Image 1 (cartoon, rainbow, N blue to C red):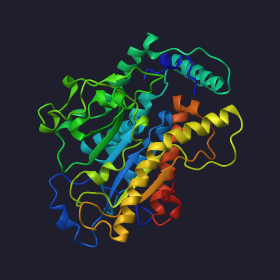
Image 2: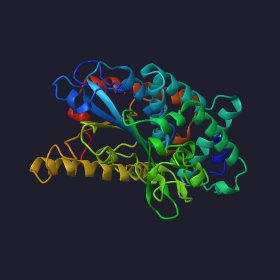
Image 3: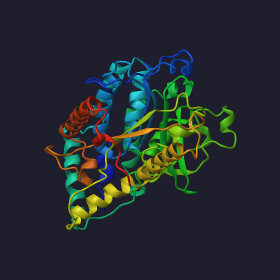
Length: 393
């Protein structure tokens, strides 16, 4: 997708009944293994949030309902995300950690209000941006400019960083313990091509900005050792993700991290029984794309799903090995159910084309958050509906 020169300037930026069950584990809880010997024990759930720009306002709304409608049937043990999905996941974590489900919902509302184009000038910029990108998508030539050549990029990043610090408890993440909900966010190392995943103690505003650094919009983010939030951790000695390399958007690595939920923690006690994917890019699409806009739209969706499908394939492979006895159940792995809550644009008054992923109009953001809450309500009310099982690829 061709990006117009104005892009950089415009960014200043649950289970078996009708009610869901999602609770964050209490701090200082009793031994998890003993607790789960009871048939009444909650099912452990991890939520993975796919990236997708402004479309992740849908994720914000979905998380509000998933986290606010709990009755002990589910226990939240992990959250992950890439790019905008990472922002929603960390904001929700911060709310849970500092007040519970209501605080998480409040912070998500405040976050998306702050990210929206609220002033008349921001709205003017936003409208011009979205129209310009749509013109480029249908082949109308527009100049392309590197984010390094745009004077407003640094100011946009500073404004975005301030918003992130206002809503996310980075210090709380650094101090988190094994009893807190595990978080994972992703980015790609531009220099050596490796995937980077940041967990609770590794997460900083710099690593989150790296997960959001879309190459055509923002400069790559250098993660210096001096910005490592836990430099005294023995893990950091020679194995820190803060290695001085430059990083881009998590869309290029794990979108979002999923297999990590099987790799950490080491035992199965706190590993999820179910992983819920809040998905922005549809897996299936009807008909044949024929116009430039349709081709670009579907190409964008497929690219956004490449890494996610690889992550889900790994989980399914482990499930199959457990089922046929190749891997022993009860060791390091256990069977995990995969469920997908996918953004459905049917009935929306807005297009969900690639350009709309940059649309920060308050009305669009509010509509996506409402759609997230509505779909999450149906998702939780129908735990046995196969329609919510992640499609095989």
